[in-house]
Length: 471
Image (tube, rainbow, N blue to C red; front, side):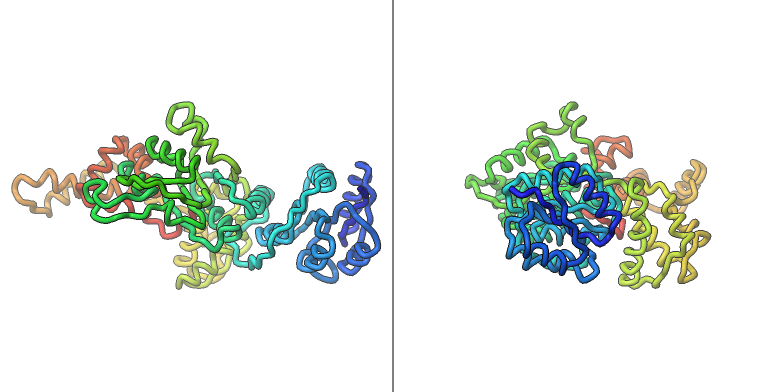
């Protein structure tokens, strides 16, 4: 097999570095700077691999590849690009690239990829798909490039994906991207939050139930697995799933079949599984909180989402991405000045991208100037109220008792309900509706919390009071 590599790169310095590295590995490198030069070289000789930039002097290096792929179907393709967005990564995947490298790239990784491409007889072709520009993930940082590359690797298969990341990093957006851009895009995308469903109902929610299966089952219910047939089932907060439901989930993943609660018939279900968690499952396995065999069933392709503090170079792009969204929601149109962007980049962002989006919407609502600078932004960076004292609480309680007039014998229950309701709602909002974490925050048993939520008629299955949830 020929060891000649065709490099299409108009940046002389980059081309020189790549050429030297590949020649040191025994490859012969021919360089061209344009699409026309590339096509001429392909017409004159045979090459073991094609390395191409995207933005070339005479056109788009990816968009012009269709006739190349038709004429040279077995030619491994490696795409190099400074246009390092998810759209570029997906387009590279769609034309059947063996690998995609955003600039700046690791030279050793590039050389390794060329060796693998040349030594492989595999043709990584994929069906063309116009992914478009409106993709859900924003960021060009190195950590996000790693995420994009992992996403593109799972688009043309149905491997199970486990998305790992802190709350607010955008795990559901990654799941939606895998579905929307992948083989299952014509099927349904069904999402279920395992932490938001009471433990006694989660099996019915996932697998469905037959009429009369339990008290209150007045009709047959089709579960999430059946709803997702032909598409993608996104299991969010998988680390909070009760152990019994974990066992049934494992059985379903192994067999590809479910049985509705109260039913006898086994039903084949064909859905891609994408799971996500903000918890570290390995210590949970050691402590008996998560099944080890289920972990390995789910952790086929892990995708780790970086926290925002590890991708600060994306903050400006994210903030400017959210401003038009705020305007589309009817808020005033704003712009961020350089000092405001610098201030955003200095923040800890414990709530990650979700917290940043909340701040940007708050800025759009509250700012007095159309161009917001740091001095106007600073007061809007926190939504923490002034700290109340025990005396303030006692005063509020005294005021409630002085103005309320419940029937005799109901004063205690009335006062308790009045002060428990905002306490429980606050805990649920702080934890994104996660009852287990809300109970821990309150310092009470989860069953006690759920019992009181029922008694107080608090809708504990509702999403938290956060208008801008990303995952």
